[in-house]
Image (cartoon, rainbow, N blue to C red; front, side):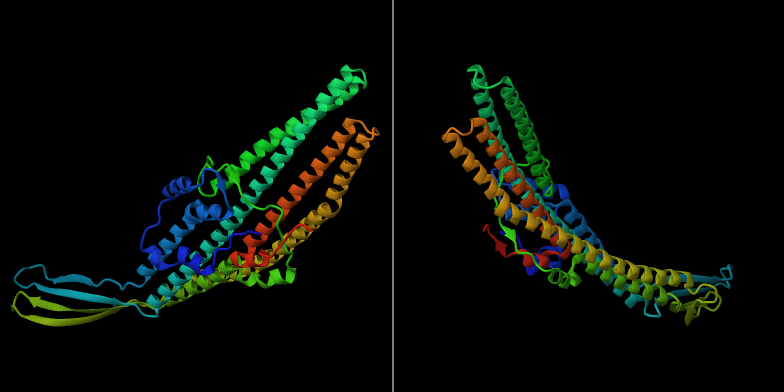
Length: 433
């Protein structure tokens, strides 16, 4: 169905590869300016829209900055504690003074440094999962916004045709009233129909403008440069089974983020548990006596006695937060299953509606228009009857466009839940029968 599917390797290269972190990302405003300049001034394709959004979407920029910040915490977590230097003076009288110069090195016990590093790495995993979530959301928003533009363009074309038809009907009715062939009521009816068509045209024009702005806003452009979206609205996907969709749920970005959050909280618990052990400070130095002018080497050890503060409160808090993260993971799993089932049900209904309109409503409306046209040629119907049949066909086509838009929006919802890997379930199109 012409969907944009970013290969996982390329996604990782663009978003997560440390090589890219060596070159600072552009600011959101700079990226938006560049994307606006690169936006086509005429026809826009789905691939182009996706590339622009990946390059300059503000939400992705925020997630990238967070990943950069978390990567810096990993660097800080690995550093050793600084050495200490101190001076002790015994007896303030210069003739009998003893001065000791100390150089000490704190040694972390209990695996504190390793626990910090692991906690920072788990935080980086959470930030990466958050970036994947944002990417899936932006990708789905681009797909939904692009097909909204396609739907709006088609509705505008139908509204323009309906307006032309209504004006023709009004002109015919006016001439027939002037000729005395029909009642003035017929002209009033035609005028009301023309006014309704004009309102629909104005609404369709406004809807198209708004949908174009919503799409361009995904890459930070408040005033769209593109004038038309090029795509195939009528290419709808095959309907995967709910079981097939559910099988992909374990790799859904939001589910993976919840799982990574549990790992991060467990690592933070280990950090707090390591703090129960006091640090050891090893010191060495020189003691100089002013009275004898002699120097002696001295060594020392210092350690806190964990009688009152054993970090018990922080450990208890960390344990509670681990349990909270596990509960949130369960809640996320249940919610995603429910959202997926509801989206699948909506997609089933939307595809059925598209099929019914294709097979029954559109052929019936077209058949009615053909019959009315033949009857008009034979003198059995007047021209207003033909116009009514044409309006009915336009309404059916409008309903068909709306149903197609519902299909594309629901597919985007499913892909937002499952992430880019879920897009492979919708790449097999089914054309019009």
